Image (cartoon, rainbow, N blue to C red):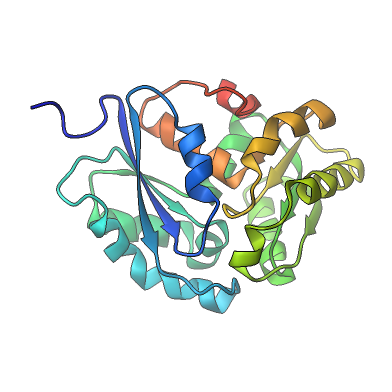
Amino acid sequence: MRPALAERAAIGLLALATDATIESEWRLLLNLDGVELYVGRVANDPEIRPSTLAKMEVRLGDAAAALLPGCRLDVMAYGCTSATLIIGEETVERAIRAARPEVAVTHPLGAAKAALAALGVGRLALLTPYVDELTQGLVEHLRAAGFDVAAAGSFHNPLDPEVVRIAPESIMEAATALVAGGDVEALFIACTALRAAALVEPLEDSLGIPVITSNQAMAWHALRLAGVADAPPSAGRLFQR
């Protein structure tokens, strides 16, 4: 018999039931020899608002326990930026570790902050699909963590099934307008449902600054937590760290 799971890293991802983007982006970013991705789903309300996001807190432990029980996982990631903001980073980590105490844990907020620090970013622009309350909450969270959010913009869409359909061309246009409006060192495109990972390299070429997305940052963080230092092609400047 051969080893049960990946030779280098076994990474678990808890994706939202309504997120039609995250799994395809992660499979491209983690397409590395000896690295395997295993995906579970967390039930969620398709309307993304603070009150609906908070309901996921009680589901995290069961979702973590249900993903390959009894098998080795090196890292487990929770794939929702806005829910991590509402539920709280420590609460998310505690819920996952209660079910799987052996795993390292990542989530979009922690990964994004680690990515910004690794790139030496102090002043950034932020693009989200969220309602204003969530976008402002994310701005305040990043500022409290020591980052200067000089510009922020949103598509103002509360429906997850529609967020996954926002055109890459619209994301490119919005990102370009945001960065043009301020002297920033990086762009953070938040939300795992936005189809943005493939835009990182073209945006970096056109804007001349590092670009991170929720999925790209979290995949990078998961790999680094698992001890994998590889840089997949076309994944942006972050993966050089």
